[in-house]
Length: 101
Image (cartoon, rainbow, N blue to C red; front, side, top):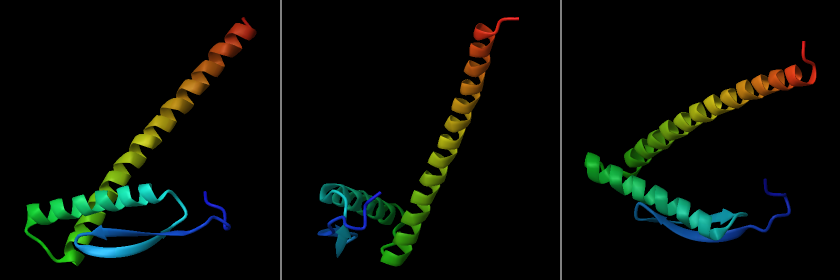
């Protein structure tokens, strides 16, 4: 997490033929890469759907990204559960080795 004293820099990016000046405390290159990914997604959606209204394309892009995020959150939750289960199993095995019956 960025501290309140992190230096903010401006980065100019173009997304769906619109130029934006963004402020970032992170790496400028990362912000540019993210903007490029969003631009590609929006252009892909526009070409596949025939919708060129930036608002409509933006909403569709947000829905696509929200779906990806939800899928990743599910995967992460499943992974956390598997790690917790394995941890409990290892703990039980270790207890058996340390305190045999």
